[in-house]
Length: 125
Ligand SMILES: [Zn+2]
Image 1: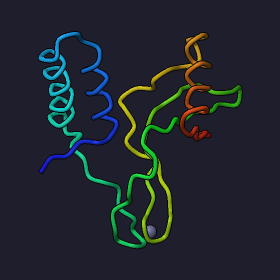
Image 2: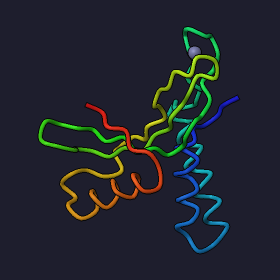
Image 3: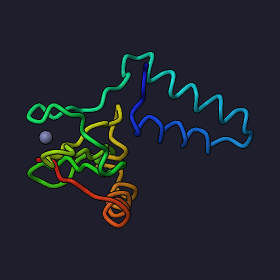
Image 4: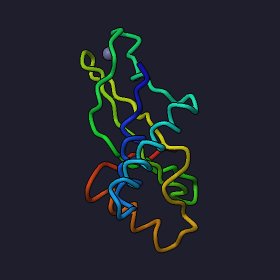
């Protein structure tokens, strides 16, 4: 059975909230999910090779900040997963594109701060 990542479901729900008619919203949300599945992004949970079990979602919607020598570049949304046996953590389930980039001078710092305030920000170097 095809399953979709939490990030895809969140995107679908955002599409749902962006319209005024419930019918249009449901149609849009279903299209988002179907597009994701049809593009071959059907989903399998990450697996811990040491313990041979699936990771569990530990925190959905964390911010991942790509860092360069000169500072932050892109902000991505993804999911934090943890092995239920050994506790090893990974970040997976990234969208196709960053949710914001450094050149968006007003939006970028505001979104980064919002993830720091309401979620987790993981810096990637
Ligand atoms: Zn493990």
